[in-house]
Length: 447
Image (cartoon, rainbow, N blue to C red; front, side):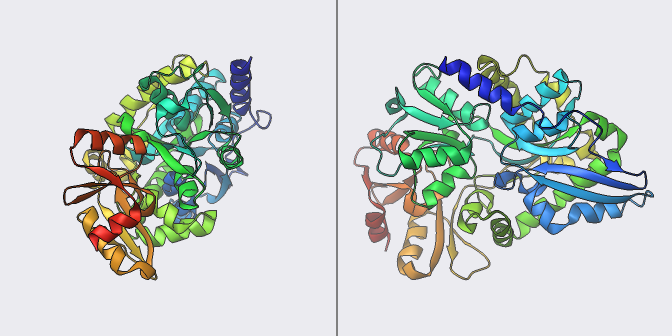
């Protein structure tokens, strides 16, 4: 019964919010409105949403088309990808952005309703899966995935975070259907449930885990990067819209690329801008979208991401949220290739920047990189009252995390940070003499 309730709730999220009607591309022939659905708080979509909107690049590039039309952009903000899909399949949204699992549901729903959609670009991604994290309350005694057996775990069914939870439980030998009590909740509801004690753990996507950790309302239990399976967000467009107005779609993708360039060149300013628009702390935005953040941004549809998308289908099928999905038919990079021109091949081959620690001094417009965790801790120890945030990459997965929220291990003269307790314990068990220390102790050793 509980399983059925979850599936019905997930299916309801996919129902169109309005009756099927005409295209979102409204207007009188000369004046045309392009409707873009985005998720402001899902901050690794900002180059196709929040940041792009604030920069005005899409409007500028539309005006530069000089095709006899006057364009207006209607930006519609949603909490998740499901309502964007519902509006797209109702013909009410032309272009949208969402995570990998919602993208697959978007593809399935579009085909089912005769409103096919296309994956036309990527926004933020992590090649190991670090965009999703399982967290517990700060005072929780849970210390490993095995401890979740029989517990109440909040997630959003059909999301990438749910996919991470399912795969992580399977690897831990726990049946994801019967081994836990899964609570199908929106991220904000799940966060409240965790704080209230009605959920023992929360599996969610960017930026919820980082936000709750930063606020002292949660601590990490599992780093999605341990799965070593890419996760990403992308841009989807209605197929009929793409065919009718390819120049408009290409203008959007060109503007997205320009917003990506801005993010890369001005990561602190971009974080401040996104924070202002979303109400999220800039320090949390930077954790994911910074120079060495958890997310990497470029619009290229990399083969690794398409391969991961194909593997994701089985998770959705097992949850009875979709049937078979023709991923190859859904993926269409012709528009982004044309928009980026010669730059596309370079972006397709580009690798994420090497993981490194960063310190964000108060009042600074740039962060300071640290070659080693010891170097970062030494700087923080000497400037305790002048630090806005400090970030360190997990010694195993490379996932960036707040230095004061990480689990620290001393191994000889080395100080090593870990996001989750289980990986820290695994390192200690494999390295004689290594042991877990407090953050205060780590600072003292580095000073």
